[in-house]
Length: 241
Image (cartoon, rainbow, N blue to C red; front, side, top):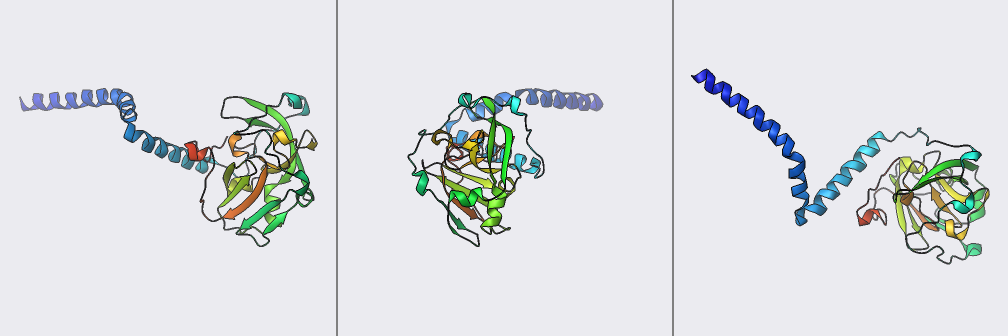
């Protein structure tokens, strides 16, 4: 009798466990339906996604590159902004203000960036809106520029601010990745205003909104004070591809 009761209880636990597992997705959706918990759960989920993506990021792993025949014609490369196509920068007077954990802070002009080794690469630009396109980009490696300004190797982040009030940040591994560019060319010509002149970020290992346009300031920091325009709206920060 006791053995039968024990067997019945074990079977009940197994069935109950299976039924509970089946209910978990519905329970999770139910929790997300509670307004006070939505923001906290989404934020924790994004933090976990960023943490997992950073663990998987390989410094030497390169994004795919393509032949010139794969590149979309320049006129078909989408123009995409969060605010305006042209913030009205005086390109002749433009400088990139550098600060933070660097040996040589100050204002750097475009010819100083152009004096660094020029890299040209055909890579895919992927937008969070769902479209992607292969383009041709040219510029200086951000890692070479960080060496030029004497960036502290112990700093963890690079942040940028833009003429249209956009802002973004990168972990130092992404900033020093060999395909991360201070981009001043598209299709072997200087950037147009609509595409971010005179200098933008070009990062084929990242989603499009990380690739800030119209750069005006760059700061090397040990911690982040501002993360990124879209990240502060709830988007993922690391977002590696």
